[in-house]
Length: 159
Ligand SMILES: [Zn+2]
Ligand SMILES: [Zn+2]
Image (tube, rainbow, N blue to C red):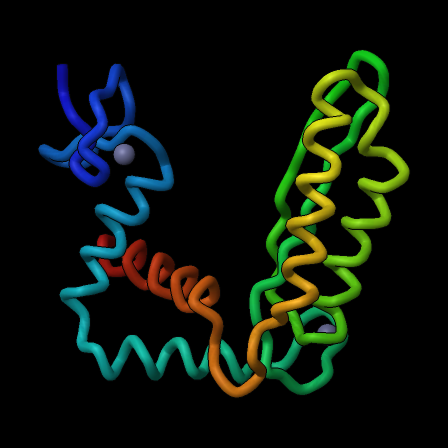
């Protein structure tokens, strides 16, 4: 049985990239795409991240910096249950609104399923609150934003 080239877990199926195999999209991104970025000039990478960080907000057209904000939600009705993390790149104002929107949504619509809603709704609300407590520092790009830009560079580098 093959092992994941990144986390070394035994896998059935999974993703294949050249002679490497990965258990999940996450491992593929971390193990393959991030490796590609290592081949690109460090200075170029940090310049690209910095430029991305300081662009104006695409949601409200105000000046940046922008960062990555995630709307964590669950949606539950008796027989339906789903959960979702929707990242958005925007300024702090829009970002806080985006995160709050997820908390409010989950508080109203996230509970009405047993057991998933009851277990997952508090989890997603906590994720939202945690994000509001530690908002990204406007002076430097967050690790999540940096990772996103690097993945994008890795993807482009592969072409
Ligand atoms: Zn893996
Ligand atoms: Zn904005």
